[in-house]
Length: 72
Image (cartoon, rainbow, N blue to C red; front, side, top):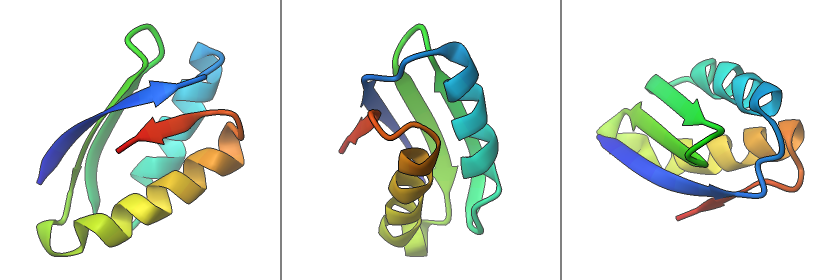
């Protein structure tokens, strides 16, 4: 399943790159792209566990950039 999400309060391109690398390591994530300029995240992950994976993605992103929110 592939979905796009809007991001709020993503502060810098470096943080976006760190988040992208961290999310890519999560089991079940096939691909991820985070755009600082567009404040968007495109993610493709295992259909059967998509919500569980997204919960992990939110936690991972909070560790890298505590102010950033993923609008679901």
